[in-house]
Image (cartoon, rainbow, N blue to C red; front, side, top):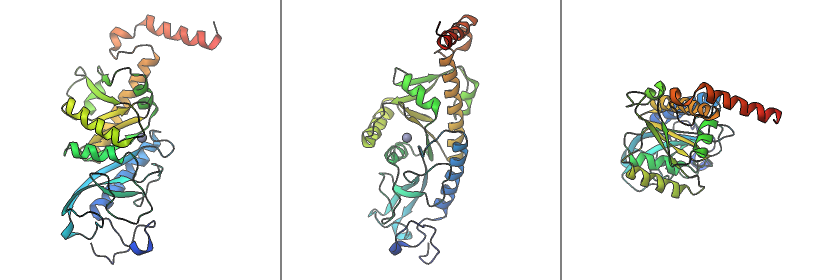
Amino acid sequence: MSADQPSREPQASPSNVRRHWDDTSASARRALSDAGRWIDARGWCPATGGNFSSRLPSLRRDQSDLVETQPESVIQRCVVTASGRHKGALTESDYLEVDLFGAPLVSGLTVRPSAETLVHVMLYRLSPEIGAILHTHSIPNTVLSLIEPTSRLTIEGFEMQKSLSGQQDHTTPTTLEIFDNTQDMEALAREVKARWALREGLRWGLLVRGHGVYVWGRDIDEARRHLEGVEFLLSCMLELERLGASHPDIESQVTPQSCLTALLAVLCERWKF
Ligand SMILES: [Zn+2]
């Protein structure tokens, strides 16, 4: 990367006016911005919530002038959304690159990484198979993670489970671990690491109680497919909750009687019987 290329970073300080991201980073930023518009259209990231990231090829310091702050000769890195950006209007400048401990690779920028970057980089460290992560705050993932009394949401009986890589049928349970919400992201990242070891790895995603979901894939396309599948499944689970059928086995749980009971409850509430 030559230093005389035009800057694409309007937030950079005058002493740092140069393009500081390479073509792989630019491509990832565009793909994540596309994902942001798609996610925003579905209402899954309201009010600047959520954050996205993509793993980038490692950099050798002696082959690049892109990295200013890291002394290591080989730097594993990802690109992550900056804090406070609306996910429906992301541009290439609304990201920054960090190493896999969350430290920015370029100093002097006015953009800051999202606080939840520490969860992203922990997941990248835990599995080289994870290439992209999408964190959203939808109504189904927020509500279901809040009302589930255990630390694990189990989903079964849905054909759409097969949208998740490696899920062969609808009868094998799909599980999403639930973590208690906290503003201490270092603590949450440590808990993710501990649960990952306890469960011998987590698949597809995880929930944070009353907060949202992290979904990942080998690349951005797979992460998008997994997110769409997970959000669909969680929407179905929420519908079952509304019907009073907490278990997703529809044939045995959603009976005419249970539907009638739910309907009567709604009518009683509405008309104060
Ligand atoms: Zn969040």
